[in-house]
Length: 178
View: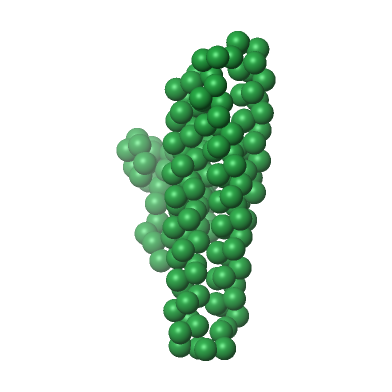
């Protein structure tokens, strides 16, 4: 993870996300990430975990979680459909990351036939990520089920089912293994 510091500007900067000018004396966020240029943000544009890691795999996984979080405020059938899309995207990303871990382990074992600690760790990561993928799929299925039944439910039934679905999605999201 990169280092994130909140400090007062001694000279003017520009927010790297929204473009707002950060004036001298104004609080801002400085992001120092290994092997990357220093970035500056205004206080409204706080960095997310996917922006702070130097691992492409973790960045993808964190980004998938962030997309799910961004779609958890559900008030309509359309919002639910957006949540299903977020879950589908997350499942796809998680599967891709698990495949990358397995491919990396295969590559190591191709040259070191007895395997290594690193290849074993990669296989464990792939297994954990695939297990998490199953939880996300269960949450997606439950969410899609509510989308399909939405029009036939009264307001109270919708609210009750919606609370169950949101709880299931949050639980699945929070199971992120890495």
